[in-house]
Image (cartoon, rainbow, N blue to C red; front, side):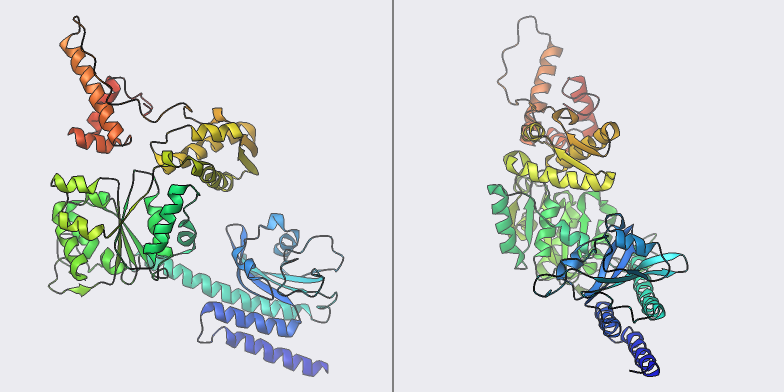
Length: 523
């Protein structure tokens, strides 16, 4: 082909690449079409567009590579070729005998017999002025594939790719702005949520819970998730949503315990402008934001009785009415509720509506406390250690066998949440003393391995001796009663205070005075 003809063909391909990014397709489809044209012009076997974010290169789209590439992240310090590309403002070509490993070796889609590695590699950093947006790279099996392609051709495709990433980033910024202003639910499903719905562990109790989650997720039944504080009720709710037919729709979170009674109706159902002092504009409630998706009502047992009646109507008829409006709206919402209270007992005590309880508990799920599934402690601790390694910038962190035994010997009154905090604190403190590669030992943990989680409550009271004063007898009785209530509530101080008819702060002060609670919060 003559040079003039080659230039004409290349120019037409570049025009086609630009038009592909304006086609009436999703951004993913546009970029995949762009890579197809890029491969046609350059003759590569595999190419990938990566976005640079938070110091890591994340694949946006690829061609000719295994699908697993799209689930990976590439740290430049671990991939010397990518690091070299990022340091250059011009295309970087790697010789066939370059000793630096190619990041996509063994990842080619349908490689030829023998599984040949990459022998031609070229990459361009995508800069707009001084802002790095990502990398466009191309690979081929045979040496010298890109020798006949001039740098300006690669630079032209790189410029088009930069525009595409800038456009995608701009759209993302607009979406985040809309989210911040309340125009979309802040709880929209994203990658973090989809991966955050993992229930780690293989204990019999957890396997049974996973089985029930899989059963109920396929339906639209209302689910009531019950369990102690910190067991992971929200993780269960997210797992149900992620496995449901509504997985691509919003999962909207509401902390019912944090809703003041005066604002609860507005938060749940929305309001019209002028409905009350400070209502300066119409505002959608959580039900409307969750339309088509799932509404997660955490700590539902804390809802005031006046709001329970309105929530019941929304569940019965699927209709909501904004505060200050006389019009009803349909809301296609699946309800998942969670509580650490015994709602059946609350119903008997008149603290929770019986009809709402039966509406919510169509499919009840009990999340077992961590002390009942010690087999799950090691994998959970490993998961939290991995998070600590990333957050603290550690090279390696692991648990000594004795440390695992110590963790399994603890009663975990705070359940999985407490385990997470214990592991993170231990890793932080140990890293300050022992560097970036460490093994955590039992004495790194701020727990007592022999601690049973609660002193024995409800011990039989022995008759007071003849010299016992009234004040001493009263204190002994208070001490036993507090321990008994804490034992019944699995060390939940708030619930114990409620059952004792005390303010939570007053209970803490009384417990300290009676020697049941030390100044650092441990008892």
